[in-house]
Image (cartoon, rainbow, N blue to C red; front, side, top):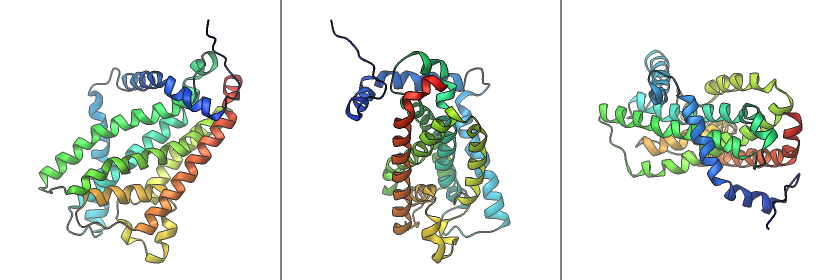
Length: 271
C-alpha cells in the first residue's frame, strides 16, 4: 500500500511537484475567499467596480481639474483609470496575501499542504476582482468614445507583472507576520504611502528625466506605465525604467520565495 511521507522541509523539486498535486486545493481556497468576501453584502461584486470608480473620480478632480496636469490627447479619466485598476489590484493582493497565513492558522497547524498556496490563492482572489473591474474601463472608454488599439492585447502580460509584483512582498510580509504580528499594521501604511509615490494620478513623464530611472525602482511604475501604454494610444513606454521595475520585481519575488521556503517548516509551531 503506498505511503505518503511528510518531510519537514521537502527538496525543491518535490515541493514544486506538490503545488501541481494540490492545484485543486488552490482553486477551492480561492473560491472560498471569494464567497466569504461578498457574503451578506448588499451589492456584492459591484464593490469591485465602485472602489476604483470613486478613486478615479477623486484623482481626476484633483490632478486633472485642479492641478491641470497634462494628459495629451487621451481623456484624463482614462489616463487615471489605466493606473487605478492595476494599483487597486496590487494593493488588495498585497493586503490579502500578507495576512493569508495568520487568517488560516487552523488549517496551517493541522493539515499538510504547500503553505505557499495560501498567499497565491489570496492573490488570485484579487485577480478575480481586477477582471471584474476591467468592465469599468470598457464603459468609460465607450462613454468618452475612445477606441482601443491592438496594444490592448498586451494587458494580460502587464497583469501578470502586477501579480508578481504583489506576490513577492506578499510572501515576505506574510512570513514575517507569523512571527511578528505588528506587520499587519504596516501594510495599510505602505499601501497608502505607495499610492502617493506611484504614478496613479499623474503620468510618469512629469518626473524629471534625471530622476526617472531611480523612480522606476518602484516596481509599480513599470506595471502602471505598461497599462497606460496598452490602453492610451499616444503613450510611450520608457524602456530603461520598465526594465528596472521588472528587475526589482524579479529580485523581490526571488527573495520572497526563498525566505518563505526557509521558514515554512516553523509555521505550524509558531502560528
